[in-house]
Image (cartoon, rainbow, N blue to C red; front, top):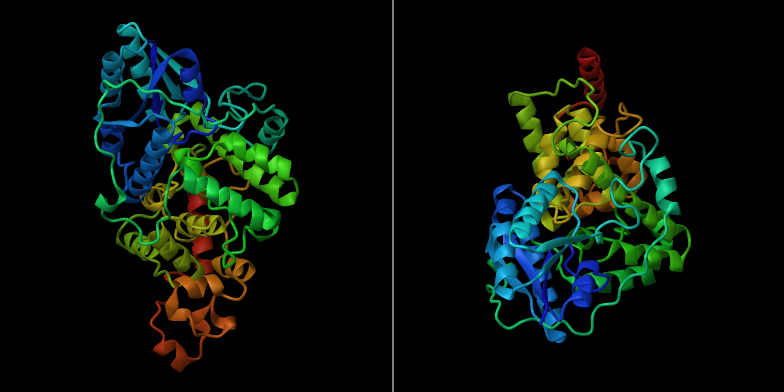
Length: 458
């Protein structure tokens, strides 16, 4: 009996799973394996929200495998040692894995390939995370990656898509390979109270519901903060409980402006991956140096703490930061506003904000998180690095009735609409009775400080 190992990482599904399908085609039996990599925990990636969501995903994956005669083998420790150990126990010839693109993932993949080769085994890597263009496959003249989204998107949109793969009907697993008990969400502490459930079933049900009720209006409503009209599929894409290829195929069949706008967002996801693959250092270093002299010291630390706690005195910023802690998720427009406020209005290093987001966001993803933060901070791929988003103007535009603010900042629930984004303008007695902080900074002063800082750094 020939055996292959399928190493699940950020592809925790059975539908459209190239590594699993290839392993089943090549061997009589497979070992579906997930390793709780201690290096991931040591690096700080295994935060409470993502650990809890992961537990849901693994339980759902195991249940789906059992419906097909299989099971999920879970091990803990050094990933390379555990995979090599399982391959030896099962006498497997091959290990199949989905490609990843961070520096951490590529180093780990290289170690695994060498260790397996030393035992006479092969590592086969499949593209299961990007839509149509794996990083490095399409490049502009004179460069190893696209630095501007629009030309990248043109090439991306022209690429052919493979047909999504059906979930296997049977997954035969050898008897001799033992695993640990599956982790459980209830054993994780520090989880956001309203963190959504994970797993492929949850993801597919969310897609079905959104296609029926929200996709057609996506282009018109996705920036409306109070409407909560985004797809909320980001966590499922991060953990791979949904296939991006299948989503694009389904969206294109559905058609319409909403579907086109959603597909464009998936293109941004691939765009950031090809930037990260070409420039791994951008996970911590500026993509393009602007000479910023970020604020430090006690005053800056106090502003950062007010930002983290949602007590800046700017209602739309505070609403977003409180949503982040409560749900482990934040509306996309709100992510732009809070990032701009920290990096430009408060003029604090973008890495501080990116780290906070990575801790709380269940969809926290190195490529998307770090490069979106750099885009907003003006150190990344944005062609308008001096853009500053005004939280009052943006609040009026994207939360005109204050519904989003009132939902997350109950101190402001009963004030008149005209004051909901500028509560400091309330009449004296009303303002004095309001348990809500004064703005940490005047917006004009913040913009002036940002521009002076940029000028000094040139």
